[in-house]
Image 1 (cartoon, one colour):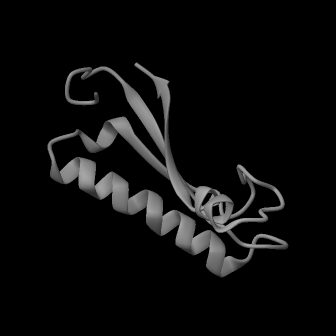
Image 2 (cartoon, helix red, strand yellow):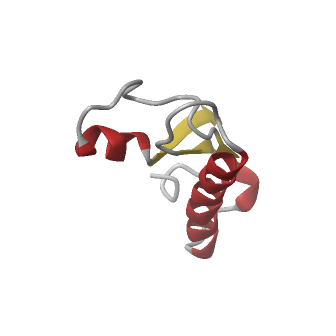
Length: 85
């Protein structure tokens, strides 16, 4: 998508599954997830100036109180949001 749409800019959002307040460790893991995806895209020809990586820790879960493993897994994710062109 990014290779075919050279004007698009995106925010790469890293998230973690962690109960309670957002910890320093959880924040760092989410940032590392987002940076890993950014680096992959850059290594595959996407201009770094079109990409922003942000870690959100556990502040934006899909499931606020996960009851199943798949819900916890869904909270550990990377999302890509179009922010402009």
